[in-house]
Length: 321
Image (cartoon, rainbow, N blue to C red; front, side, top):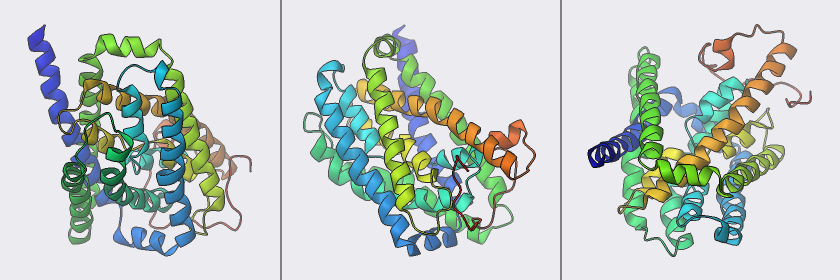
């Protein structure tokens, strides 16, 4: 039994950085530099998305966790706070494809949020987690090496080898997907008793509430965004799916508690369960209104070419249209 637990521990030690590096490399390969540059020129959108993800969500979410901390097992609240501080998840690209959101409207803001997380987390996480030791400089080095560097490498490879960028991105995406599955299996499997305890505890309701908070904050930022965003619920999806790779890297830095890892995985899993049905549903509605054919591959965001530029309709798209 101890050997099996050691194997699961080794598996999560490998799968977490592998997931971070592969997902960031895939994102860089699929995100042209011009997409990021175009997004940065729309300052209204940049500030609204940054404000939602690095002010409202961490501040209000942390306050809720502190108020409800007595209902949570030790370190679970700290794990939730780490996840709330991590924005710019690569999986948002897949969710955006499911919801029929133009690629540039997810890739551009997501890149901005990723860069923001690299700067924000080393400064803020140690301040918020007084009871958990977090070395800000160690976190900064970790995020720079396993997230920012692979993303930049992907952007460079895409520019140097444009004909092979999609194939390389698919390969990196496959590695990231396999690593994610192993990460969840090893993280939950090595702490199965604790996971079962969380499933029947108020922690599940707190996780649902935090994802809902992030969605509503992102939705408001979408209403306040500038002209580069034409689908107002795009920032809601972007904000609801926290950057699990960055959060897990921070949670495991300096030999962090397993409860931190489980809490991050739990919040991510709750977000996945809530967001995928929403994205698929609104994607069906939008494709029907546009007279497009709908298939399972299209709905899951695995079929179809990446658009070169975002569409810019005259009127803003919304679910209610």
